[in-house]
Length: 83
Image 1 (cartoon, rainbow, N blue to C red):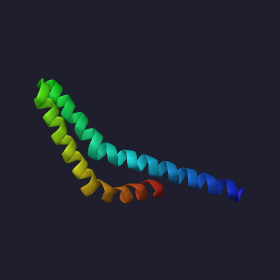
Image 2 (cartoon, helix red, strand yellow):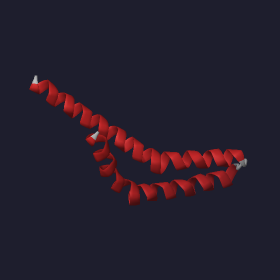
Image 3 (cartoon, rainbow, N blue to C red):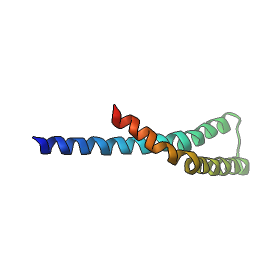
């Protein structure tokens, strides 16, 4: 019985880690790029301007992820595990 609880706890920790990584990626990378694409569609950006904007926003998002997002992964993970 203790062995089954051990593996159940390991599985829960792995799920918390996977959801934490996805949550941080969504917050720092995927979300801002999607928001930019919706705004660009709304104001009808096309061609080179759109590609330049997506490239610029992608660069900023990747920078923000490495500068700030990697630091938040342990905090979010600890919040999920402590629940």
